[in-house]
Length: 635
Image (cartoon, rainbow, N blue to C red; front, side, top):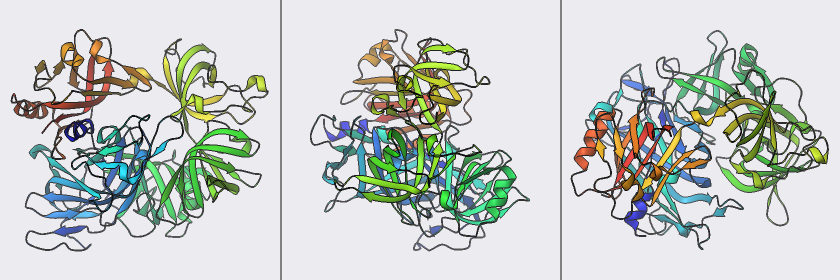
């Protein structure tokens, strides 16, 4: 497969989420470059607007994908260049699949911004491919630049800059004392080509594309991290100085975080909620590290937290930390899968496929969103958790973690499967995965009240509160539950659900790829309200799939073809046309503008190599109502 084909294979949506600090928070002036002038440092700016930049990612076949974001520059219509990321940050994109991370909340000069450029540095990249078993760590020499076919390692250039052009209708407009929004998303599945896992050596070929939206992704939580500036019970809010990911110093501006009576807190491993939690937060010293998870309201230009961590509850703030999913438990020894390790007070994190963890009577245990007393007995197989303690290495060089004098924070866990039966407040299913880990990875010994009652993947039981709807969960229906695993030795049920998700309401992901050189006529119909791909064209693709949760459908079997229409319920559309050979893209928020541009590009010689889309899928009509879509041309 040549490099052009590789480039086509690698593109989907780099989307992101720029939301902005609420007006009550002060900002830090960002570097700007006036026409004919040099780049200046942070400065006060009377004609600036506050911009909150966040970054997210779409799913891919990676356990870890850590690279450095060294620059994100915006270009104003008059040529002014603004650097929004003055401090380089290590980013593990594999951790951003269900999350958007705020990376800046500073101020930029007013004006209309028409393009962006993001630079990634792979010189110290850690890339681990998920092969379903041990994971494959990719050697630096096998991380390949798709444009040059050379390794992204010295002495070759290690940086890649991807460019984004906004259309005239979708320029980022920044005005003083106001909020502007832009969204960026790095899609790992589309931006990387992996050689088959049974081929040695495994290589990853990288060729990213940047796309954008002027509204946040409503399907994901937003996370903001940084030291506490102040808290005000009177306004039900607090202010933090933004330090994304695991940065230990500097500031990317300030953000006002609103709270409600439903906001939960974990402060120095003590849980609370509402005004009591905010009062406890206000009692902390300025500079205490805080992490808030919440949502952005575009209409009110405000960020509201649903969950807040502070002090020693923040991973890496006062102790080493590891986060992962329990694969097995023997006595007080846990085996934790896909451990994301944060070193105490270090601007860094590591990854370990498995970590052996020791807990004890001195381990403080809490459960997110729950009050009451918890102990290590509440830690069972399948539970997602974050531990604080001391990192170590055994005689074989494997990671170990001592949490006997530390803490264990039990996090919301996701289980998926196929329903086999239902009864009053109980659903039994064939387990597919727990926190995206295949069911075959788990050893459920000791989870039940007796060995005969231990959990099994073939008949995994979920306790469902009466308030949750289960009427649609007939035999054979795919289902996803969110909640907490039953304490060790106390099953059945094996899991206690707080939320049930019907896959009928789950967003579908479409991926189509044509063989070299692509298709010059991929659409049978191309109108301002609908795109149609007929069955014959679908059958010409080398890759054709619609993924809904863990289920995969084949659109090439649709005799009536596949219909792509704009989602009428979407608050915003993220649409893009990518160009494989130039690492560039044009972005649109209106479906009509997107189609008009496609008609111009489809001039009889330009060939489409790849199409990706996301939205709700109606299998009965073969219609995908898209809120995100990209068409990649082989040019």
